[in-house]
Image 1 (cartoon, one colour):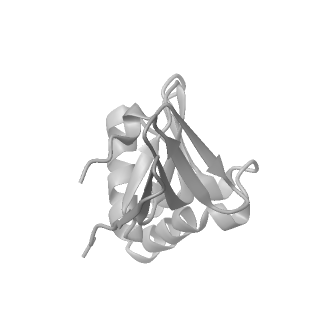
Image 2: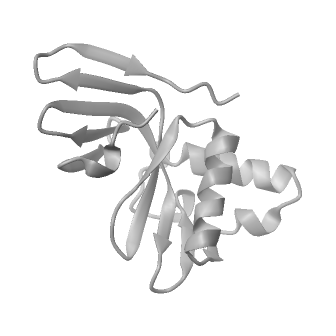
Length: 139
């Protein structure tokens, strides 16, 4: 299902509540969120959220879960704090991490240093106050 999250007027992430919010003219979409990591296209690097001091510890559990999975499954290179990566390698890391953590999806911020946020079930609230919730079965 596509919610058009990339076309939102704005997005906000509240690290205290662990909620991502996308705002549109006619609706708001919210979901529980985790910060997976960040991709810097200028330096060609990926950094996991669990090593980033600006990420609250409670918001990096998906990143830590992926690190633990990588180590347990013989992929220690994927568990390094910072990884050399081009856009394709970063996208592959994100896709694998979304699958391993069973996230509903992910959101990538715009810019040279993109924040990657995984999210759970999405709740849409229309301008009239009606609410719809969506989840994707990842099994």
